Image (tube, rainbow, N blue to C red; front, side, top):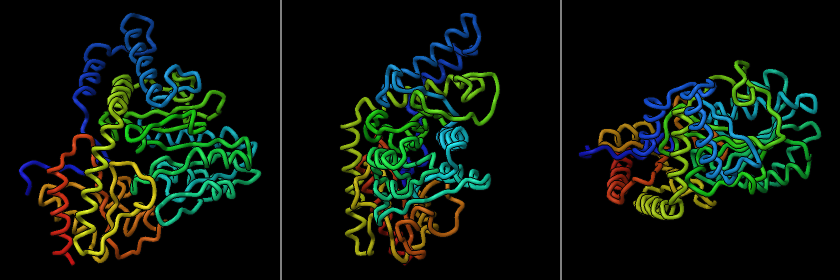
Length: 383
């Protein structure tokens, strides 16, 4: 076992950055007032929220909030649900058909299933063998009664980048009034995210994927776009996400986004080189391995390694015994038996083991070298 753990499951969650811990602690220990209170303590908390909105908006290309509003949520899942369920219900009078890619996050797919149970129809658009959807295919799925189109920016299992801007334009060329939602949870801090350039109506992010706290996320909502709230309450956040705001979580998310975007280019280049080194060593080991999604544009921090004839679960446990932590796919689908819906969508056979190795800006070359050797050694032993 390694002398210290080698954590390579950063697409599942990340260690909270020290700077973020300081901000969260300050909100909990000093500016702990209710932001809806009119006294000095409440005003201080409200200012924390507004500062967080400005910082997160800057990371999303809308610093002044001129193009949209930021609604703080409990995470990416709630943000996706508010967008998909909220937009569908707000526009139910114009149609009850929904379109999404076949590789969306379970948060989006779960919202679609809930709407299906209530009478909506859904079309899932297939992807190619790299996991990328064609904008033309998205447009072809749009009907006269389509109200919501969901297309994620980065797939959480493969790391591939989907053509959101092109898909949004193509969908609106088919029906101008569709609400386009984008799950950008795995994108923020890994590549530039510009809500205006993407041309979306809503976009979801989550703090714990970029060294922020768990239980904090946000939904960017274009001005003029309509969503119905998931519940009612005290009217906070324009009544669209009522409930006392999680000030420490919002401030932590904003600080994490600021840090992640500050040195985005340098971090991406270094992490991408480490990812490529890991893939090269495993693929050159004579195991018949391949990197899923490698034929498409990808974010630098995710490698999806396909190992024919090597069962994923025993390999995970063997690596854990050596102090190396990876996953077999999305943590949100870890209880599934057999390949995930993403792997099925790209045609991965049932008997092929897949590892998702996900890096962060703190990952070292030594850790990658150790992990690559361990993956090769344990895969050979299991075969």
